[in-house]
Length: 154
Image 1 (cartoon, helix red, strand yellow):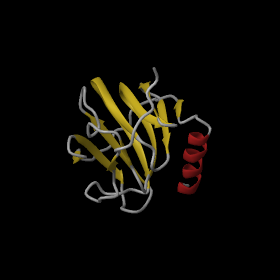
Image 2: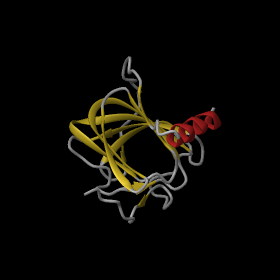
Image 3: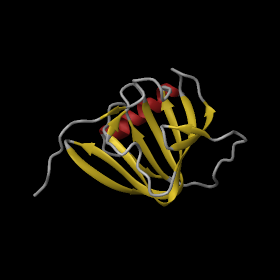
């Protein structure tokens, strides 16, 4: 299953279809505690094993930005579905920063090493995130701040 999902992620990225629209019938409810995740977010660790394909539900607080910096996940591909809330997905493609509005049903297909960030709207953001593989937050390979340069139009 993880090999197929990784192929989807990489194919969608290569074809420029990295942001697709699906449908959220209902928000999954898990009888799991919310734990701190990446300093300011919370997560339910639904199926998580270090080094293996894993699934988390991640809650971003209202009007927040993931780590306040563009970053990459150097050894983990991601398939993300927005479950609740709105916000923006920032991504760098061909040296340009692109901003995409996101809402429930949006699916984001992101291979490793893609420069990105998420910004939650006023009601916060709830996402289901598949990590291929899962890398614990305290591992230096979980995420790396991006220090590159962007192409500016105009």
